[in-house]
Length: 390
Ligand code: GLA
Image 1 (cartoon, rainbow, N blue to C red):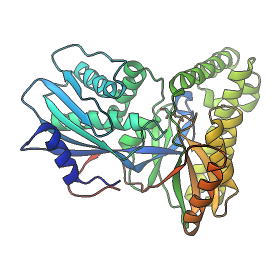
Image 2: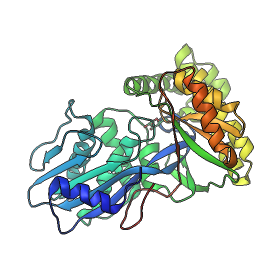
Image 3: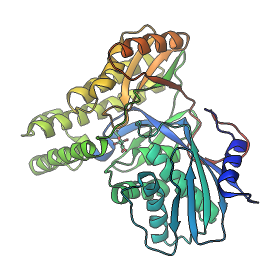
């Protein structure tokens, strides 16, 4: 689906009526190329924004309320700016907006009444950071509409706080940082311990990354995610006592192997090995050794399956089938896991046959058909006027 400014404008006017001054904004989703479950463990990640994302048309209204409508959800979200704002269990998507509005108000931003229409071609709940996208988009557009300074790093940190403390998902910083700060055709190498970052050009030559969506909803994600995080904290507490380690990703294999309890030890083994893979992946990408990059993707998936135990039957089936299909040199789950999406690195002239073979093999093992998304890397959150996004 392609969403242009004109269609967004007419959706806006159908919902809210004519407005003289409408502005348009876009925030992408992201894929993590490699470096999973490292952000909240002080490790390195290598993600990039994708061209699928969420669009917003915005106009000021004369009331003291924010009114939001989304093409993807039935209910309208209404926030009274003069009242205290709390999360509402019955309205999960509205909570991202409520959280952002409330946290921005707490930093002293005077938010005017706004009408906002959202439209999206980013699958939601699929591990492509639709939550970070709506948070960062909403923050960016409110700051733009109020002529407040835009500091993308600060935006990402505020949105992470919203997600952790207002929405209740104990995520790390990777998603918000990536959708806010990405640049065209680059990945971000981010050290999540101190937020030092560099851009890494992504030139995959004859190969292309593609997204493979299992289309299976990730209902258990939040609780299982928070449990993994606790297990890592348990491992770190033990390693801190024994060796003075303050960030799990910095431990040695010998140290993590000494962790007493099974689950925390396995999670820590993944963290240490994945962190090394990210550094190697960045180096091989810079050298153009794309075959080795693909191999690292495979090793990453295997570690997420065996040690972190977040892949699940659908993502294993996608990745493991993909590895053996002609033209595919690497595939792995991306995002939190427990279903959602994989990414694969596939030779350009094999993409169609790859999709067909994988789609068929998968359907002989699972009931829900896969969908495939090709994408460009066009950078992070931004305003837009004329261009069409696909
Ligand atoms: C989710 C979280 C991120 C990160 C990934 C796993 O997307 O929001 O912070 O932990 O899972 O790498």
